[in-house]
Amino acid sequence: MTAETTLLLVLLGLLAGGFGALAGVGGGIIITPLLAIYFGLPMHQAIGVSLVCVIATSTATSSLYVERHITDIRLGMTLELATTFGAMIAALVAQHINRRTLALLFACFLLYSCLSMARKAWSKRTQEKEEEVLPDYQPQNYPLGMGAALIAGGFSGLLGIGGGPVKVPVMYLFMKVPLRVATATSNFMIGVTAATSAYVYWGRGDVAIAVAAPLVAGVFAGSLAGARFSARVKPLYILLLLVAVTGWLAAEMILKLLSRGFR
Image (tube, rainbow, N blue to C red; front, side, top):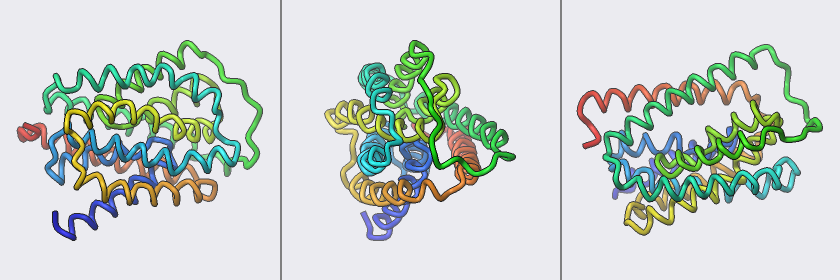
């Protein structure tokens, strides 16, 4: 691997880690398609490397959010029971799914995420700056949350995304948890979720160390920066940027699928 490629991977990690920490999605939603489309990694290896990067994001951000008393540890540990189980099962069956099917699943997931974040950004356009003091809340609909956590774990094992794009909306919309708490709790959970799947991918040899090492270095630094500046950045701007990135990546993956890529 050339020095230019290594530097590019570090920069990609910085960006993905920063976005992942701010939005609570782990960065895998950006890393997996970029590795598959532009770096030529097979989908299974792109997912394996992405899972390792998600662990780095969670490691870098969790302590900061816990220190600020934003993370709901009890809620996170409860949902993690279902998420870990889903992640393990999905990682075990992923090797039996061909690369084009995985790529199609990821493209559909990117489109779903893009539309969901666009809808959320539209609803936030007239809101004022977020309150600094978190309101009192009580998590609701635990059965729904556990079911969604199981699905999130499955997505993590299959697509290398950490499950954050599923967990955050579910906690915020259905369990009535404040958005900042949902984001912080998701960052707390995704490391355990990704580690469960990453162990399986590592055992199969689907984690390319030469690619993962510079990415993890960048992701760790970017995640720390994103967590530290999260209170200063207006959520609407982050949502709009993520909408643009996920929409573009979805289009790129669909075009490559149509051109018979991901063989």
